[in-house]
Length: 480
Image 1 (cartoon, one colour):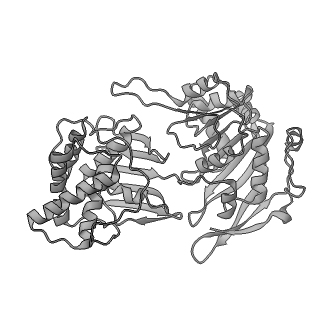
Image 2: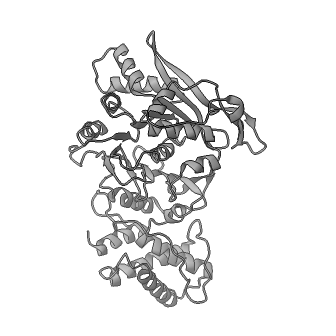
Image 3: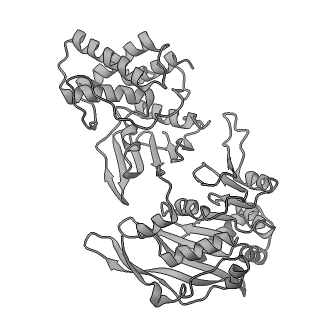
């Protein structure tokens, strides 16, 4: 679609005109570049963006947008941010003068910024995406947006002008990763260019209008030391996990929704040596590995005819033919769990994945269920044996009181007895209460159990501190 048509589609939505046909809107491809400090127009002071444009300003915005379509649609270079701002500012000054409007400085700045965000960014959503303190954006409907900061959820003053404007932002996001969402296919998972995860649900499934959830990824990749700084792990935990990854133990990260599983998987992957070949398999690409020798695979949904889908399970099978040293599956959700277990059992030690579960024991139950979901005609005993021999370490993460994410348990599988997988916990977080602000208070401590993999570590040249498994030496009080 030509740029003129794309801008015209936006103008129709703002004016409330129906779009032709019933297909998803296609808008300017790409996302806005990193925000830069831009000088405001003469005699106009920079100001924060408002929650909703006043009616006078909203009407002016629609009119100026129409002028932009009419005069400059074929000339706009979306890579020239300053050039676009200059054209918008010129048209805004012309319209304000011609229409005899009286706008204060704040409204004028909001008008120009809103138009710039519409053309180059993601509309009202842009301000939330640029706020580094926000980790999650939850759009319940166009006029209700909640955000999460430091683990706490609050109502944002920013809203969309209409369901049509929100729908345009949704269409723009999903189209950039080759996906589609409309009334015939009203649910979609996608991602932003920075790796942030996006989930969309449209009417008629969403009764109050289009809704979208964005889990933002930090622009600065977290390092192992960052977990220590924010109190999400103890030094002994990270020392053990480093040795486990470098000595090729297979690790399963378990936790609930928004507990930090993918973030921890990213951090654990940083311990992998640079000469190893890594293949990652994900539903929506989120992993941000630091190594160079990485192949990233992403599943594909069906096309408009319901064909062409490539499931994670197919990608895991294909990864085995790519001579990987490690396979990292972003999240096991179905039959791919069996293929992952088989990979771990056939020469791909040191592979990693995540699973939704509330405890290490629950994680094994989940994996067993997922293997059965894949249609495997195997007895329960055989599946349990596969799990016990494939997975070495289970790391449990949890979002504790106050919203902080923590590693609450590290356990290793010691075998299978009477059909039950045996676990030995090595480290844990013991919560003792909450402080005056509602944040969790507790200690990280070792349990006193020695790892059964000490000889394996020694064979691989990985050494641990002598007192790493001593409880008294490792108890560290942490908050939040």
